[in-house]
Amino acid sequence: MPLEVEARLLDVDTAALHARLHALGAVQTEAALFREALFITPQGGEGSYLRARHDGRRVTVTHKAPVDTLSRVEAEFGADDFEAAVALFQFFVLDKKVHYQ
Image (cartoon, rainbow, N blue to C red; front, side, top):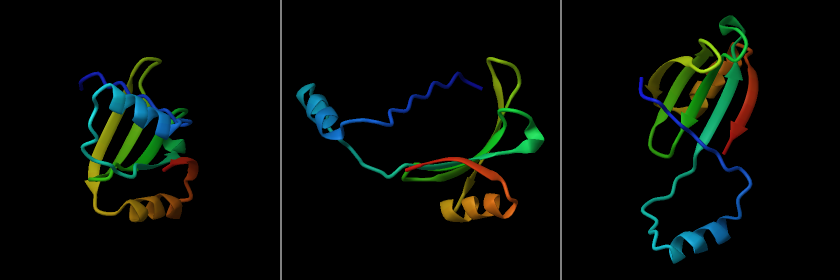
């Protein structure tokens, strides 16, 4: 699996960011509501979780578990409905860790 680097900026002055990007010549090509819900999975050990994610175009369900301090094992598949995936996790009484929107 290729190396993946992900960054999240949760407290952003979006108006200032848009102005700065525009000044640099950036052009917005699309906008989407990004939603993500993480659920702790006791079966996978510490650091293991299930995630439902909707990136504005597709919904994915992912399980991630640590292999060692630097890597994780991951399984992912597509889903039709973000809310249904979250409801399924809640049905199994998984603890919701975080919900981004």
